[in-house]
Amino acid sequence: MLNGKVAIVTGAGQGIGAAIAHGFCSNGMKVVLAEIDEEAGFERETMLRSKGFEVSFVKTDVADENSVKAMVERTVEIYGRIDVLVNNAAISSTKSIFERTLDEWNRVIQVNLTGPYLCSRYCAQWMIENGGGVIINIASTRAFQSEPDTEPYSASKGGVVALTHSLALSLAKHRIRVVCISPGWIETALWKKRELRRDPQLRPVDHSQHPAGRVGDPVDIANLCLFLADDEKSGFITGVNFTVDGGMTVKMIYEP
Ligand SMILES: NC(=O)c1ccc[n+]([C@@H]2O[C@H](COP(=O)([O-])OP(=O)(O)OC[C@H]3O[C@@H](n4cnc5c(N)ncnc54)[C@H](O)[C@@H]3O)[C@@H](O)[C@H]2O)c1
Image (cartoon, rainbow, N blue to C red):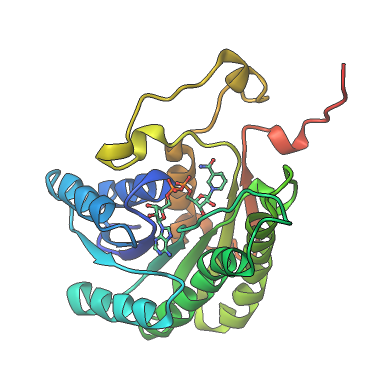
């Protein structure tokens, strides 16, 4: 039963995070949009409030401990508790290893890996007060396979998968479940802030190369979050990763 529960979704102004926030709100949850981009955050807050949902944008940089601490305190101030955390915010850096600076490497690791660690740490303290909770980490199939020039993103996502089983064991005694979702190709063009929103530009081959016959939609990820956030449905699941990629990572590829 999710109705009335309180969730924090990081990076919820746009993309997959926005779809997760929408799914949670539609199921009666109160949601904090912990987003670094003010324009995206306020736009999403306005859109969701116009549907009558209880939702608050709190400007947050998940890589900054003081910012995370303040966001968690603000959430408790507004809604009184925290039941669910979705660590969704992430950035990437696609360039040659010889061109990428150490600062660029560090920023990706800080946002994508340190961010989920910090948010989990500060939220878990409040979840313990409620007698439990659920942390959902959004990793990527790039934790397991790569294209060239994506080292910090892939490494951070591999870290998120490992962080999931480690946290799951540390927090199990507090009745906090920690799970991970690794999306494949998810088309987010329709879920961007107004300035960046556009119609998806997908070719037939983009869809047909997927065993499922189509590219993924943010709602595919939101639906699994709804299942994993609900103790009545997924209470026996913790520490594991779910790949949601339309079958791409199990497809054997040889040159024709
Ligand atoms: N879209 C895909 O195909 C895909 C595939 C695999 C995994 N993922 C993962 O799903 C998640 C969402 O991806 P998306 O495609 O929706 O991305 P996106 O770029 O559309 O949205 C990410 C949001 O996070 C916010 N953000 C960035 N840095 C932040 C910070 N430091 N603090 C708070 N918010 C911050 C951004 O402003 C943005 O609104 C990410 O973890 C990503 O790695 C996406």
